[in-house]
Length: 459
Image 1 (cartoon, helix red, strand yellow):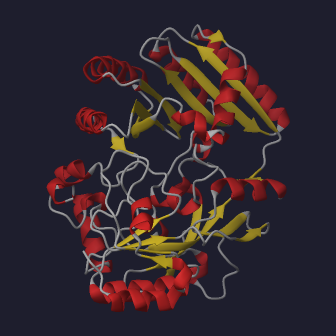
Image 2 (cartoon, one colour; image 1 turned 60 degrees about the vertical axis):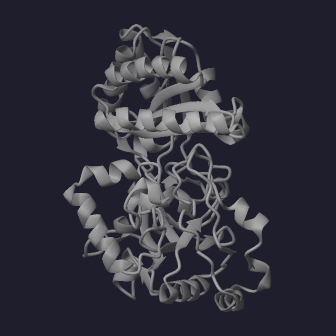
Image 3 (cartoon, one colour; image 1 turned 135 degrees about the vertical axis):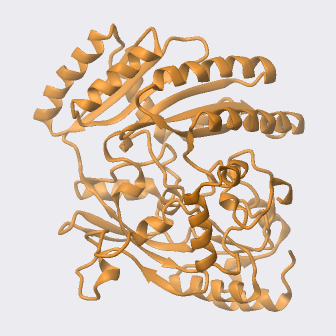
């Protein structure tokens, strides 16, 4: 859609000349994420700095029924930040302040585009950690992490997804109204954000994972955890995925302080189980012996600490993740029980697809509480249109296989739209009703989660 000059002038009056553009090269920069979803240009890019500025922008957009898309670092891979219907793209990266670290409630409040790595660094100075963080922590924003209900290969084994340690939010609704959830929103006399469940339905959870379809999160309150005294790394090689599965389940059911547990596997090599225990020193030393006993009882070959430690440190070397080229990531959750058989199935399909499409192919799974997040990655040359089309075909083929096995996508964005609409679940129908109530004009991220479009061909 094309926006007239009057709309541009009104938006410019809100943020200033330096923070708005409709130049072709700027719009092109914001037309894609890291994934395989096709490029779409917004009509205008605007960079607000405050909640009141976002209120004013949304009021204009809502009155004119102009699509709004929200973007932080833009490093997602599911198409959730791609402006498939054009309109206004909100770049929120200037809203990056750490507002408060509260020792009284072991919490912090940050703006939506505080960078995870920066927040982690500041928390560590105060003796805290962010309970879980993404592999892209150096550049990922907390708002993007939260909007996709993100999980991290470090922390999520013990603490869960980011959703599990959010205390409250400040959100601008599509009509420009502002709502505060959590304790700060339940009682004007409350001393900040210290509990999420404040005598009413969990409104915080409504916006987590919504990927910009229900409003714009501008401030986030997190529960934070004490900085561990000791960290111990483990790596064991097994002959089968089932052996690695049994070790993972036994270790979890022992209640060990495992912050990370990954089954690293490939098309040709036997699987490896990497794990990290992080807690106080006395407990860590006891749990180290217990984990070693469990792993060796299943025939695990001790590979020392280097593999797991290198994997953790690789989080802070994002260039290594793209050493083979652009990549497609398909990920989702499956139960702990049966992860070995599931990875066997992925390996069979991976070998078949490697022969069919010729892409380098990697896969594995990391633990998230009582589930595993399975990931499949293949690499291609993004600048080659033939490879790009082959990549889309491979992506859709894999999605169909995984959806039919009961996998729950970890990020839906726009690449899973076919399956969102196909599920016809009562839960999805309720989500659509809530969306219609909060956003009757359908301006917020049309296309994301399959909302606001009828079929794939309309994108």
